[in-house]
Length: 320
Length: 261
Ligand SMILES: Cc1cc2nc3c(=O)[nH]c(=O)nc-3n(C[C@H](O)[C@H](O)[C@H](O)COP(=O)(O)OP(=O)(O)OC[C@H]3O[C@@H](n4cnc5c(N)ncnc54)[C@H](O)[C@@H]3O)c2cc1C
Ligand SMILES: Cc1cc2nc3c(=O)[nH]c(=O)nc-3n(C[C@H](O)[C@H](O)[C@H](O)COP(=O)(O)OP(=O)(O)OC[C@H]3O[C@@H](n4cnc5c(N)ncnc54)[C@H](O)[C@@H]3O)c2cc1C
Image (cartoon, rainbow over all chains, first blue to last red; front, side):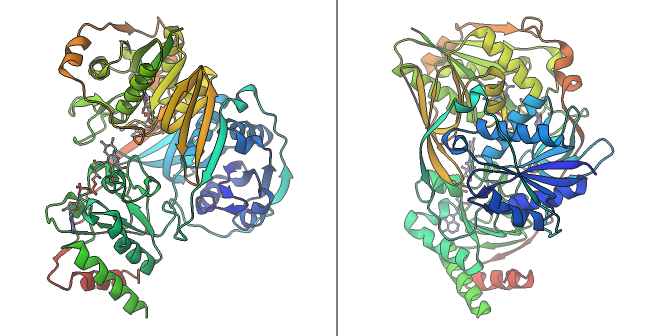
């Protein structure tokens, strides 16, 4: 059976959920071989094997963290040369897309980004993409070279499918471009203890209607009652009420949770671009004409300062 | 010594219009107004600020697109760029990111550059990968997704706010930079700027001038193929209630019914 190379996104050995989803998709088109780089690479093997990786290639070098993107491309290319896969799958993070894209040019292959589904086809894997703020759904293929495809989080279920997961060290030689862009310092983002925005099953977002950083605790309390991640509109972010890393939309994160709750958000096209593929959408807005209501499964026309705390209390009560 | 900056700008259909695909599954450009991709205004803005700080700098804006794409160049010129290059050729229709990036790379090399600046993503294709591909093709450092950028003594530095960390980056020129919409509001063209733009040079290049064969680009030369594009059905109208004191409770009941609680 053909092998499919899967690029692993992990933090010190803890594999992030989108990679496990990739393994599910990879199994539809072949046998997954995973590539894990950096500190903790070997520690990823157990969970990758549990989810279907027949082999786990690992490499660590200071170049991966000291320089931007290119050293990882060199490693992915080395893995590609070693495996000769039928396809290369990479999580659609900002960095993941850049790594995949550079590999694609190097190996003379087409690239498809931000796939939301993947299936085997007669002429290679067929990817589903959401276009124009998710108002269209397209099906595309890579027609030249080995398909390189990046996949958005929440595009497939995580399924256990135990496989050998044999760990093999990968030899990587860095090219002249690898040390072109130096990372001179790095400030890790502080963890809030809440789920990762792009991976969360539920996202609770606040917009301009929240009217101040000091009011965002109302949104956070609702999120915590549901075990959800917190998102924000660009208006809220630009006003300095919430960090940019929590922005949902075209220039923020794109999320596709089971449940999206928008409070005090009008539903501008650029915001919709980042949340329109959510399974269930709920909104609270005092303006009955707000475009967000065109998308909702359930909407409450009302003041968020009254509705959201009542909702939070009711959820807590129901959960006991 | 003069700092030669090339800014890549894309002409895109207005995102607030009713965007559609045509029969050959390329973007319908006829029924929706086109404009300079808003995210590329940030690239032009940073170019202008970098040029202001340099002793002597020249900003060229470059686009690959149909006839109307000149509008995007005019807008960038009216913001303050010095000159423009329009790569236009019937054979470009339907190019994918590999074709587009090939044309941009050849045009940038022909124009001559020390610094290339792009937006973070287009507002139509929204792939966000063209900058990295361009850096690979040009063989220069990529300093991408910057929310802050500075150029001094032949070195570009910037801040990249990623998923797990914020990084400070550094590379020597020549280099390629992409900037996010966090990099600073783009200026509005002044009346003077708009008048001045009318006199600024806009060169038109075709594939032959760039020594690119027609089968390397366009629908034929694409390395990807779109098989279908279907409009998603509008979401079925949901339940909308007016809060009369029980809005939060009724919403909780809905969430419970949907098994979220
Ligand atoms: C190139 C570009 C990229 C962009 N990228 C993004 C992006 O990634 N994400 C994004 O979100 N936006 C993005 N935008 C901005 C977008 O166009 C909108 O401006 C933005 O989404 C508006 O945010 P908002 O809905 O919070 O604010 P508004 O549109 O001002 O809406 C606020 C809403 O809150 C309601 N409200 C006010 N008070 C209350 C209350 N007490 N109770 C209940 N409701 C209340 C109002 O009725 C209103 O509907 C982008 C724009 C551009 C041009
Ligand atoms: C809905 C949709 C989906 C698509 N999916 C794919 C796909 O999966 N694979 C694929 O190969 N192609 C795809 N394309 C085609 C691709 O978008 C174009 O080839 C495009 O020019 C490059 O990609 P982008 O606009 O998404 O670039 P991005 O990487 O999002 O753009 C980043 C920056 O590159 C610069 N730039 C991009 N295009 C130009 C240009 N023509 N002239 C000057 N500067 C430019 C701008 O500075 C821009 O800010 C898609 C197009 C559409 C409309």
